[in-house]
Image (cartoon, rainbow, N blue to C red; front, side, top):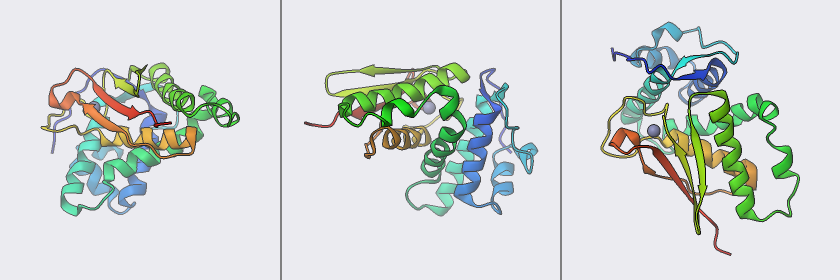
Length: 211
Ligand SMILES: [Zn+2]
């Protein structure tokens, strides 16, 4: 059983609940208790975090569930990965839960005449603002000549995890889903820096489309 060392950084329960439900959607409800046990999260079996905005769900537990998905992935292979599917699914559910709260949606999609770069930026900024204001996940978006970066300063996906490669695929998948919502197109999202690998931040690059 992995030991979970708490971080003192929190998501609201609502975000955690969305992630648990997305994981269940990915692995199936029958496999979920085993996944939670293997992740050291057995206390959440049949007792997912409540649907409220209290910031009491520790990043370390979020990372533990993500690590559990990655362990399961090693056994089952298959693409896209479980972490990717779970992140992607989380955006859809999160949009329902947070779209109205954060004022997302109306502006970006209702103005089809806007340049694509602007829509990409608005999509990224909307997501970063949601996480920065509702949780301890401080997130920034930077625009460069030919790309954007989405920078997570304290990343719940890989909190206290160590790896040789970038492992926050789930966060990247959430961005893919969010960008699809904002632009109705699919973009590649590449994690170029990862805290689990010793980098300071988890940083994702989205190239601007060539005109
Ligand atoms: Zn990370």
